[in-house]
Length: 139
Image (tube, rainbow, N blue to C red):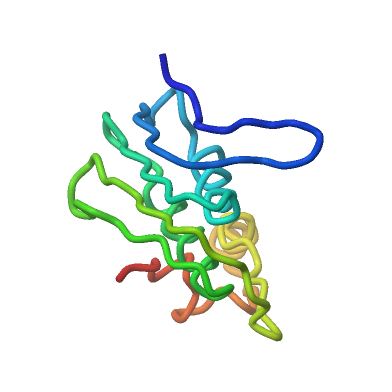
């Protein structure tokens, strides 16, 4: 049975140990990202091992990049493999001072398609070639 190594009670959350989980239908990128973001706060290291193909790896890489901006490093073993492992040590998030929140490139695609179909133009700001949505985040 797949389960997260979390214990909740009214006074604290304790994280730590090993998560051996599936990624496709059982585990979406949002849940994996949530586990990664919570993991450094529990006081123990966490290892998340994916046992089937992680098809949403680009979204998890966005999460890793954002965590890095806030001072938390998520190590990856077997990055090129469809079944990577994520290693998170206890850490504290630190404010980067300021951060740019990008526009959603997939939402902008509808306006771009509309301009292409009608022969019109549209200007999209904040989703350029330096966007992590386009280039990806990778060590």
